[in-house]
Image (spheres, helix red, strand yellow):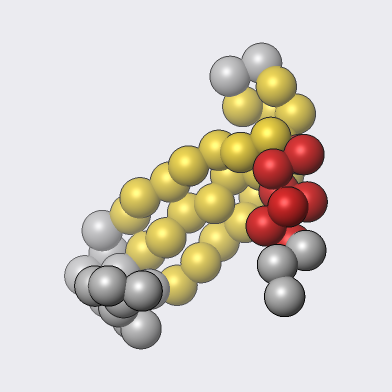
Length: 51
């Protein structure tokens, strides 16, 4: 992956986001900067099944 940074930590939280059941994925770098996205349960299963 171009620009991949090994210093990111990942946090995953299930819940309701924008009125839809899903999963929030938060990436945090060594400086404490965060980026988060929410995906549907269906898309989360696609991510989990990547091999």
